[in-house]
Length: 195
Length: 136
Image (cartoon, rainbow over all chains, first blue to last red; front, side, top):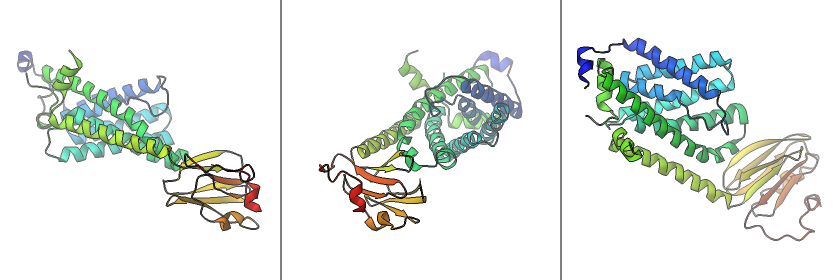
């Protein structure tokens, strides 16, 4: 641990951290939605980085809070609340959380990368299912699903690595170990090599 | 920091196994999709001449809007049939299942034509390659 963090521990209440990560997730989502992409299925899902960070640092309850706040707040800001887009986002977020929850139940030491890739695949799969039901209405879309999943695997890896960097920085700053809730999760599924 | 160092620093054994497992699943699904593309395809042409493609090997029941109302298209056990309800003579329904590449079933009053296309398509003579043959 950084010696400075022992003398000057950075303590932020967990509920405030949830708000910070949610704000970061909403900001990432809004920035991302303004960028051009080759198709609606190729967004990197940068907001999920902060869901991962909340999961690793504060636990599953905080991650659910961040994910749902992100979906609701960003849809309200973008004017897509209760539109098909909203349900796409919500279904993806819930599927990703469920996947992370199942992985969390195992006794494996899973870090953000190991959580992020399966969650990303679940996110995409759920979105395609909901898109088929609400928008496309034709099961032919499932033929393209495996190709969408290639993109999901790559973005899942990227998001996991970025989350890992953020967690390493937090750990160096003393924030990751400043909360008891974070300590448990961090030690179970740390991504960083101990230095 | 190299990519390998980044990977090593950010992952444990379980992470690597999960990443590999997910990659294999995705690659397997893609190969499965590619495998389908070499097989027969059902071409469903609706009343607006819009064509929809569907793998013959993937079971489904779907509805297509015809001129006389909805027409049901069923793909099952590598066969396809259409079921119309409001056609005067129900020729398409009575045609029953088709399963070989090159075969066609249609409901002309509804404007729905279904054809199986694929690598194994049998060479048809120009006389056979017409939809009028269905009604004859």
